[in-house]
Length: 75
Image 1 (cartoon, rainbow, N blue to C red):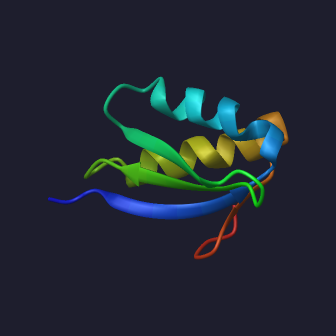
Image 2: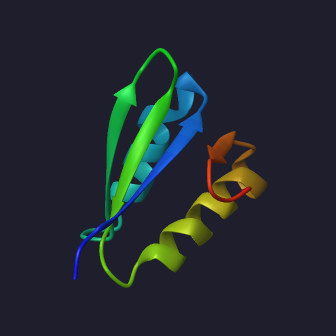
């Protein structure tokens, strides 16, 4: 199985926080900054973990007030 890649737009100030939070779940996903000025990131998600990553992102939006925009899904 291959990793799933999703691209998100976020607030620049939150890139490090999002990366640290997601990557703290060992082996679940890896975050790469595509463009620090446009604040776009790519998340490579391990097979079988997509639901968990999306739930985590939903939680960051609802509970932490972060702006996270996915081109294929509204968070």
